[in-house]
Amino acid sequence: MDARSGSGTRSDTYAELAALGPYGVHPGHALITMVEPHPGHEYAYNRWYEDDHYYAGAMAMPWMFAGRRWVATRDLQLLRLPEKSAVAEPVTAGCYLSTYWITEGRYDDHMKWTVGINKRLNRDGRVHQERTHVFTAFQDHEATVYRDGAAGPRDFHALDHPYAGLVLEVVDVEERERRPELVEWLRSRHLPKVLAGSPAAMVTLFRPTPLPGDRMTYVKQVEGVDTRLTLLWFLEADPRDCWQERFAGLAEQVAGAGLGARVELMAPFVPTVPGTDRYVDQLR
Image 1 (cartoon, one colour):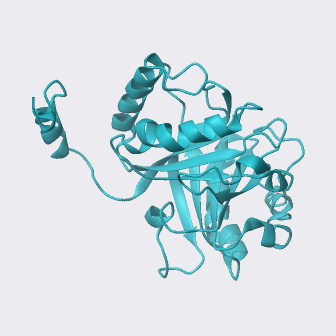
Image 2 (cartoon, one colour; image 1 turned 90 degrees about the vertical axis):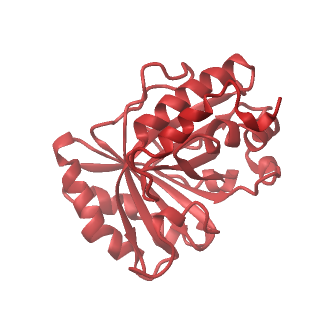
Image 3 (tube, helix red, strand yellow; image 1 turned 45 degrees about the horizontal axis):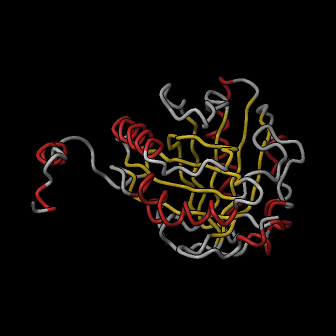
């Protein structure tokens, strides 16, 4: 039988689906997942993710059009703020971060596939169990703020462009009604000021969405759906070189904005090198 014939895969349905619905390049949604491999399983976890899960559990899926992995070595973990975090306990937990863009308007379609494929991967023994999901959430895009205006890569390029680092920032507001105010303050006042002259080329803002009820049981339900924002800072320099000058004081600025907001996590990462175990020996 010709392997290209698609027998048993309902190939005709793919042709029908391709003609329907939005198919732009805007990252309308994201999957942001920070994971801690269990002690002693770091190499096995990294090889599983690099060699199998990044592709079978992510990039091969419909409407997930870009992805990148990031890592926090021990020295980067020790830079994290605040000491007491509502996101990571301890704050150093979660040494690997994976970020993925999903086509705008295709969240529901993607979720149907991802739930189905993860059930299949579990059933086939292709899921590494020696890990803990510290912060895993699908998110809806709120805004992107650029340092250089129309010049330079756009947000849909961000996971392919060779950025030298990334900072994950999670902000909570005390009252859900104030989150739109926080978004506007970040978008129009705070972020343009911080980005100016900095090594950060852009910041993407997302708000978390609830995980489906039939998700995998090892992934806990998302917290702060109505009160939280997730910011991704894309850096042209190693975060170690600009942390004290550019990031160490941002939590105080957010708290002082008068919006009842608090930074619950600010965590720097550098990109992994696909297909290698670079940095695995520097996690502990």
